[in-house]
Picture (cartoon, one colour):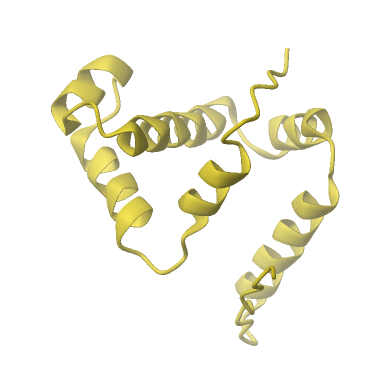
Amino acid sequence: MKKHRHINIQEDNTQQDIQALVATIAKLKDALLVYDFLKDLCTPQELKAMADRWKVCKLLNKEELSYREISEQTNVSLATIVRVARFLHNEPNRGYQAALKKVKNSKKIIK
């Protein structure tokens, strides 16, 4: 049975805006639509930062390289790698874990 976690929405407008953004992305069922939306929404540097974190997450999940080796391979700072590792292994969100599980067998690439 699929377990859904309730998103705690405060009266804060920022939280409401974040929830609206998340809901919008979730409705975009096609990877190409998500890609186009993110390209419109984010600067190239913001997209690169997210892609770097995702690359680091996948490397950390393999448990084959040290943080320093990951940094050398990806040009991502040790501080970012530590942060990704913390969210991958210790934080309650479990977003990285869920995404890794979802794409485990998927190799679709957007061009």
